[in-house]
Amino acid sequence: MDLANQYHVTAIFSEPEYSPKLAQALAGSAHISIVDNLYDDSIGTNPKVHDYISMLQYDTGEIVKASSERRSLARAVLRRRSGQH
Image (cartoon, rainbow, N blue to C red; front, top):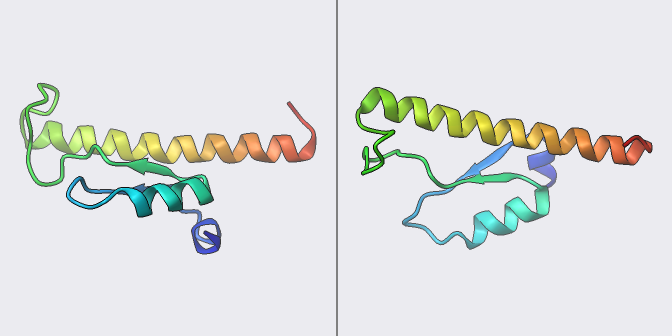
């Protein structure tokens, strides 16, 4: 957890073929988002992800969203610590 915070880790990327327990434990302890819905091996059946370009756009959006959520959480924690609301 210390290294995750030291290096400003914003998300853990998890794949469905592996147990989510480790990712959930790390994410919970370090307040990190878990991204487990990327299309990394195939396009899938989601109509929004119908070809390679749309897959890249979808995955990029999910990665950016996870990064943004972490920054928002960090700002809220800092405001709480400083007494601001």
